[in-house]
Length: 464
Image 1: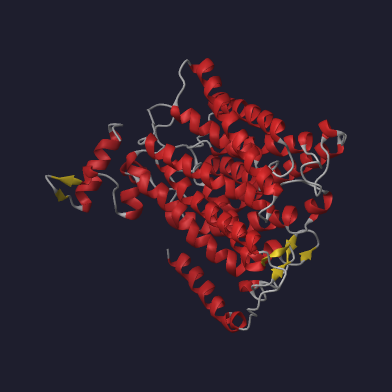
Image 2: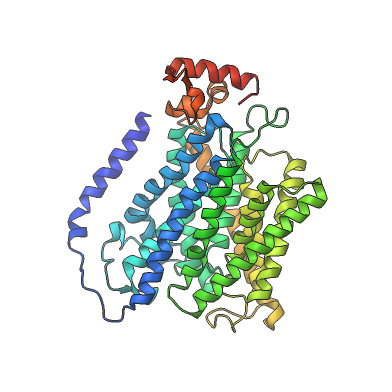
């Protein structure tokens, strides 16, 4: 814990060194700014911001009672943690001047020189609006990973891992695709984050859950969602926010935004139906957990293609995405035996992979002249090959870097809670609090030690 405080203290000192630079920024807005575009991008940024608290509820409802607050805390804390990282370092590493196709320069450290005038990525919105919008993407991406190691990672290690992952995995790869890096120059298409967000987080999630190991009782005792209505509420907020995620990536209130909005809805709806019917046929029952999982799978699959495909291709992408992700979760995961607690890899890793490849199949310059025609629109095999290169790059980079980061962090601090802490539940052992009324006896709050004893007994009896 002392090492964590030392790192935070050094970061705070570095921040103060750049305060005079921040005060020197200009504030006058350029006359080319379009108020409609600016309003839409700022509203979209707010929609995407809401997605991470929505993710907290989505994940929180799927864990056991004794770990719900920990799970929610991880997503909520990331909103604050990565917002600060983004302003200080993340934005400049992602969108700073290109260095060898690999990383952005440091000229925007602390948002130095980034103000109300338009920036390099849009002539009609303030540069700060673009910063805010992209910040919310940077926030939700590592939050997605937390679902894979739910119920077993220590909070100090979680903090260090999230900051390191954002800095050394997300920022460089986002630069490769969006900031002028080598994949951008290659012509890889990723409208709103299929490779940058979903493959990176999904593959990293798989590596993280394998490195940390399985939860106690996984495969031998029931580990069931404690509050599915909470999960449905979280899924609804994610679906709502996703319109900002995809349509906002048009960076303007225009026809492309409208097209991305519609195909997002179509793909999510199609994947919901596909997952439910696949589950119904395979397992004999249609479930609400399946419905919300299918919805997220469709949203993931359409994300890279949202600004490049029309309505019927989006329907196909959603239908296929729902079926593919269902079998990744229901069949492949069971056969391989890894404990991806909340199916991050099966939905985001596999769904993002399908969506990135599908972009190469269905992209049309009739939808977006800045893109290219895919295989089924006369573009030949080249777009598919380019997309496959981007997919492989995302898989390899995420897997290697996440493994290395976890091993380095694990060399100087504990990654995982011990057996007693896991049995007790991380809400009590890591944060000293509980979510529900069982913490009260006859109207009076029970003591911290009583909570630990009761939770330990309940955990050992597999009742929590």
